[in-house]
Length: 117
Picture 1 (cartoon, rainbow, N blue to C red):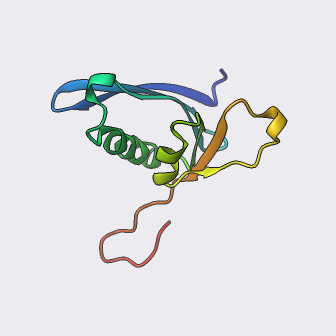
Picture 2: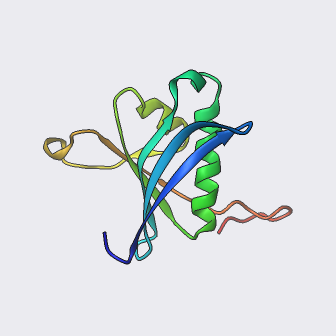
Picture 3: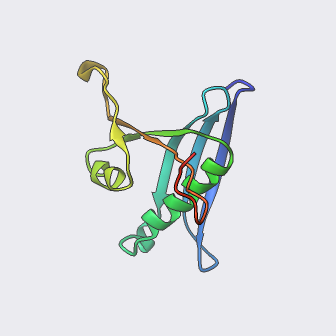
């Protein structure tokens, strides 16, 4: 890891309880965040916390000035990530061990505004 890459670990908290964790590598130069790990612990699954906590994390990354978030999805989680706006990356099938995906982080429009940054 070089000085252009920052590693962050996030505790995912709900109602003052640790429900999961995420690990993100942020490349300051390319403004791409790589979501290396995202997990909602087993006892807390099925309550919508994955979506809620991911969206909170995405907002934090957006506020840090990152433009894209990338991840490698398993077959079981691809549908979840697509539902959050991720698209498949075009990668040579022979080089793929998982399903690489990416999402552009677009700034939310200010209230009363008709544009996105």
